[in-house]
Amino acid sequence: MEPQQIVFLLILAAALALFISEKLRVDLVAMLAMLALALTGVLSPKEALSGFASEPAIIVAAVFVLSAGLSATGITDRIGAAIGRAAGGSEARAIAVIMPATAAMAAFSHHLMVTAMMLPILMRLAQERKLAASRLLMPMSLAASLGTTLTLISAPAFLLANDLLARNGGGRMDLFAITPIGAMLVLIGAIYMLAGRWLLPKRQGESGNVDYLKLERYYTELLVDQDSPWIGKTLAAFDKAFQGRLQVVDWLRHGIRRRDQRADSPLAAGDVLLVRASPDEIASVRDEPGLSLHAVVKYGEKPRESGKVEELGEERLVQAVVAPRSEFLGRSVSEIDFLSTLGVVVVGLWRKEGWLHSELSELRLEEGDLLVLWGAQARLEQLAAHRAFLMLIPFDARGSRRRRAPLALGIMAASIALAATELLAPQIAFLLGAVAMVLTRCVSIERAYEEIDVRIYVMIAGVIPLGIAMDKTGTADLVAQLLSVHAQGLPVLGLLLLMFAAAALLTQILSDAATTVLLAPIALALAQSLGLPPLPFVVCTAMGAVASFLTPIGHHGNLLILNPGQYTFGDFLRVGVPLTTLIALTVAWMARWLWLGGPLLPFA
Image 1: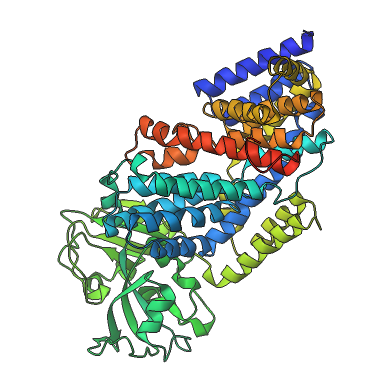
Image 2: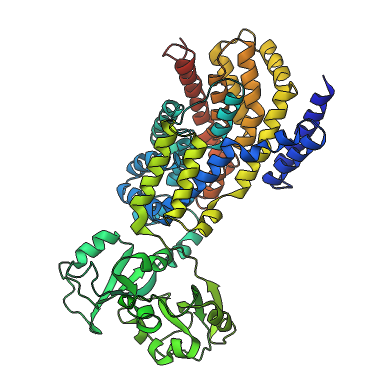
């Protein structure tokens, strides 16, 4: 063994130990490994830093921004809500709808974002339909992970595998090269979960989630603007358009409660609707044409036709809890005159018990009421010390730019089309789409930067040099030779299964990207030593890193559902071992059939 190989193996062993121990963050470990390779001379500085400009790192960052555009325009929320409605009331139907729909979303987004988006939707669905949350969350998480096998851009492992093949003359995969395998895995996963529902535990989920859901709806008032497109349209049309996102509780005209509130009653300019809405919906109202927050228009803004939108300056939304001995107890919002006395406007209210059926301005405050306040930053800072309020906390909401939803969809579709047809290099196509999302204001530049998971970007940039060093020092060839000697006599299907199994086990302690970087060069060298095309071997390795479901720690999506579903380690083993075995056989069979001219039957 050569000195460079020994140095590389020592750096690799140290990196693996740090990855497994989790004493340091994975992105920091990747940076330390990259620096160690450069400082010891195993790689040149240019080679060590090449990961930052690599195709996988750029595509991952761009896809995060594209996903942020879809989220900011409300597309992902609408899709998630539609899935919840289509799931119906039966467990089997819910699984049959949730899994393919979730997989389709994960194919063009980040599976963690999809899992996080679907989690509260399914918790609410389980509560409303009296279903066990644990019977829905694991199939959803599985589908989100399997969805990443549908396209090349949905998992860093496939981007890294493609980069390795391109650098070593193995050809470049197109965007949908792995789609046949991914589609088969999604189908098998759905059938497995439907047929093997008895393997899933039957638990309702964390009780704490119920309290959380109670705080997702606040009362607020919406004003129908002059020249609003809603003038003349019925209440039924309003409900249908917002699909329950804005739940009308009461309807005021000229300050008087309307007695005739039938579904076919038309809206008029100046009508005030008392609605229950989520924080995101309250923050999004200003982007809804023809609707305004009544309190802001009444106290804090001039009419929109004047051309001036706001007078308060740099406004923010915050929440304030009315203190037990507050001077405001028993007084109405209008009596207190928040704008004159405190410089803020009350735009929403949450009360623990009872439904509200009158104007917010006429409500008399009670202890524990949660007020949503709109005001300038300076005013809110002064308000934080006011004794009338128990605490002042940020209003956790993000506005949606729903009017730009078609534009965001078009940008996403164009980026995929440009990459799939190879009119542009994939990294340029998706980077162009990310920039277009910002330039067209589908997502703000601040939110775009926030949505980029810098840890994943830095980790990918840091682990790519490990793969380069493994190849440059000849370590990959050395391990491949050992494997080929001990694997002599194994059929091609057996070798493909061997690479899948190695990646499936290693990814339980490492990320899919790190696993692929370490094992893909070995798979490539093994194929070359046998005189076979490297593509199926590298793909099987990447699939093993992405599509193995043995433990809850193997995928971050599993960790997200662990507590809400009240799962145990054994639950994942019971469901995951048979499924991963089935996936391994399917991947190896499909890879042999697609790229090695193997027979259609798995063991022919």
